[in-house]
Amino acid sequence: MRLITFLLFSVITFLITSNANAGRIAIEHITFDLEKLDAKNLGIIIWDQREMVSDRSQPESFLGYHRSITGIAYGHITKSQKSFAGILETKINQAYAQNDSKVGFISMSPYENEGDLLHKINTSSFDKVLVLRMNKFIFDGVAKVEFVVDVETIIYNGQGEVLYQNNVSNKTPMGSAGKIKKTVPANIKSNIEGIMNDNALHSALRKSYSNNTPSVEMDVILTKEGEEIEGKIIEITETSIKYKSATQLSGPIRNITADKVFMIKYGDGTKEVISKP
Image (cartoon, rainbow, N blue to C red; front, top):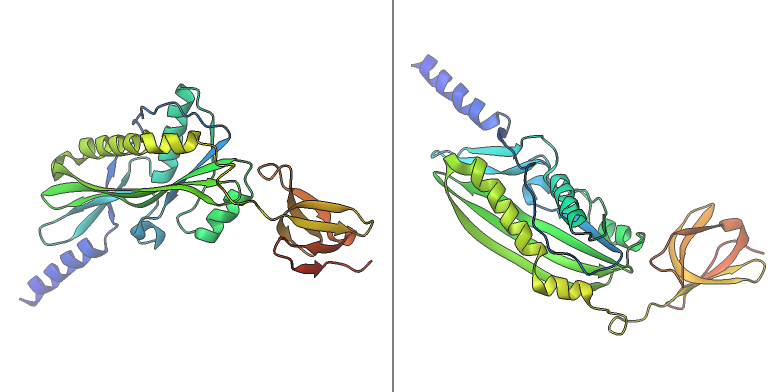
């Protein structure tokens, strides 16, 4: 009796503690049919914020769960073991290249936060940045499974101000768990195409916001030689000051050595002495 109990306990423990990546699903063959973007100098961020990935309980390649009738969850990952967000980025880039839409991408880790996001946008060279924040994008179920989606689409300008925001949330029945190798890629395809081909999103990307967004208060770098440089301070270190020129806020980051700078006058009216003349 004790032996049977021990064996049962061992089996259950093995099932629970075994690698969650019980299955692999090929999604690398997916091709997206995306409409041409009428937007210049656009950056895209695919940000995986699914809870089980951002808390590191599942890998970045995670796709979803198939659960046994006893409640044990068997995780599934991409067949290549590459990150899901990375595969989406590659496939979206390929789709836009096919229709001559010129876009760039900014990498964003699931483990980074909002501050990291805004810093990357502010220090990028893009005029607009489209962020796809995936809060949920998985399949889950027992005998029958469903595809669960919760994705925020947010457009930022180069200064990190929100120009447009929308949320796509739905649950789609996928049928039998035995068909997930076919139904998962199909659901990924249909959901991404629905999000990226949305008319409101395209309209927001085409729209000029120059008259609708608040003016940006410039910082002023005052050098020891009396020169005044207008721009936005990006970073101050012991040896240098990184900034963007007022005439090229979406342009490159510039540097000036700290020993050449007397003071910085910030846009909010405060001042900071860097080095005495």
